[in-house]
Image 1 (tube, helix red, strand yellow):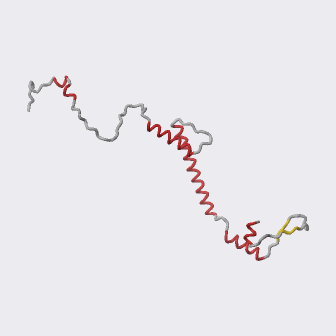
Image 2: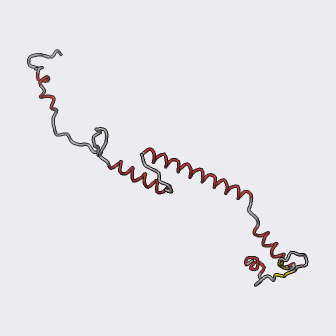
Image 3: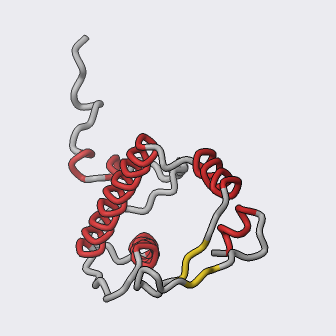
Length: 149
């Protein structure tokens, strides 16, 4: 009733009681000016436009689809890494757990392979070729065998 009285510019709406019709309900009397104010306000405000409602419904459906897809992806990533999903865990908490686990995996030196560490910098090799001193490389002597030209 407060919005209606503010709309009509009244301090209060007078309620009348009549038991003539046997209803016993209170009713209000409005004059033509007050009814016209209500009519103008309803026309100015208008109802929700059908296209606006449809666009909002489409946006909601798209957002819900994206959110469910993200939740499924996070759940699959957690299960792939052997992590447990707890009851009531939000997607943000699950992503933070996954990020922490990825950081632990990245910092770990315990790898199941022998890939050498590489910092991307070329290292100078100061040692000469050790194969010149191998016994099988000393068998051939150029002084004994001449090379045909």
